[in-house]
Length: 351
Image 1 (cartoon, rainbow, N blue to C red):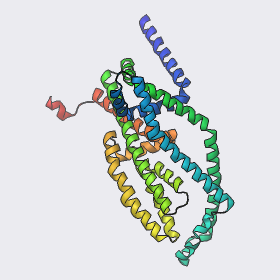
Image 2 (image 1 turned 90 degrees about the horizontal axis):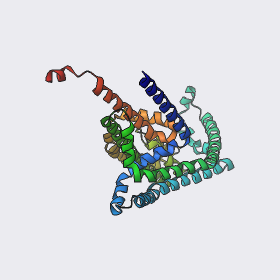
Image 3 (image 1 turned 180 degrees about the vertical axis):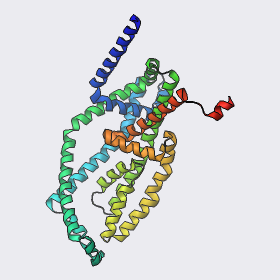
Image 4 (image 1 turned 135 degrees about the vertical axis):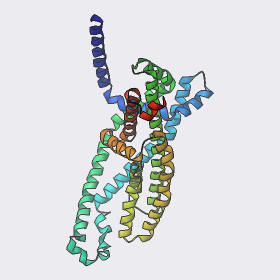
């Protein structure tokens, strides 16, 4: 009885200390999460560097960090900078009256039969709403940029924490995993299965989704610039975000093609549709099943729903966190079935 009371008290203390610990580090957990994800994704690179410096794991970890900065961080920073600059230019043009979106569709009236007016389709009303939308959008862009400036310190803090923790994850990751397996009480086999599941989904989601999104977004931005689309960098960045979803970059280039067509730019619209459907879309159709679907071992509908749910819960990091949570949910319930579920009658007869 006394031992049971002692055990219950210890577990209660362990629970409270754990909650307090995660509460203490709550502001930095996202940085730690991305450090873990990057450690998983770039583990082959680290091992390759470590093979050259087998007795100097700290040096290998530092060299790998520099490689990640050159391969990932700096290009993403340049893309973000281009998006901010483009947003500022568009905002200034709208506010100064240099760019008037309502005039861009002025001749659509000639394309709409007069009979449509009896159904409430009023071009003048559409132009007015576009003017109001442009004004509010310019203010929103300015506010977002201002918010970005105010949040730079927090972003730099998370970025620094990610790189700092990533160094130790590279150097001591194997030992940390073994220690975690040792202290968790659910059985080493299950723990290794869960860790392996986390690694496979994180690697597939980041390597597959980000690679596909970057390729599609960059190609889309270049295509928009060549076709003379206003704000090509912003649309390219939005295409990167849209391409993170299984729905794909069509959410961006499709409406733009429709607007170009309505503006009378038929050649540009046709080029955008052809390149978007046959080239940019082909990249998604060819690479996503191989890089994402096969490794996550989840149906497309679940990847879509978990990605959308992750984005709504965790922001941009949710495109990785959402599928990981869904995959861990499936794995845990499969373990539950294997451990406690009744075996099918055919299997019982086979024994």
